[in-house]
Length: 350
Image: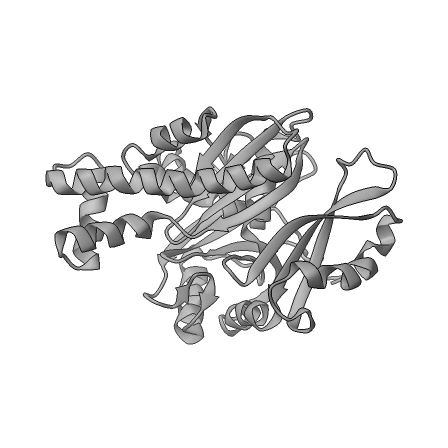
């Protein structure tokens, strides 16, 4: 590591697509230099768990070739039910000792065997109590984490960083909007298989949860309601999202599913508020492929009672105009946030 480059590519491995992001960083700026994506092989990853590692490695290898990146180190993100993030309070101690203390504290908060888990943490500097301190505990099943590393290394890359999707989303947000001192905001990334729900308070991530709803929820609901294949249902959903004429039944299903998805998001919001009753959310930023679902933005805004705006991953982060044009950047923006947040890391980051 001492003599090698710390530059990484961000690999966002999702249910429906894999995104590769390369960024060139300086002390004062960051510039997108490469972006590519391929479809995730059907059934290769389910609920964040890798089911077909060989075909996933092949897809990543083809994506690396397609983008012509010369970097060999990769940062990726895990998500799903095998990852737990939880804000906990522990007796105030020196921050250097928190890791050791959590080995004793964590077991009561983790629904799987702690001896077969990877533990990480982030101290939250929001507590005014002289006796207690708040920590965001992150736990993931070790075999689940190892599978991600093995898939990436089988694709000819070095897996330097395994992050959590919500943390990568927060990293992208901070790179573009800075640390919003004195404010609490929600970040939503509505993907294909899951929605990342993140809360940032005073510039720190204090809450992160994966909600098992997303674009595929609509595809499944259309398929069931109309008795068509998932492929046909996906095409109908895309047609509706691009303003093409579709049967009224498709519009009705999307409307009902919007309500159901918004309700799931509201439950996570209510759960957060119940544990942080003194926090006032000022606004929510939303990204992901779900932005293309007709009416979802408005329904979520009305359900939460919070002003929503699109999260722009290129509000401050620049792009190489010799490689990309503004129209392309506009097209990829809803899909780039997690990958960009990963690409802004450096090998060796904790």
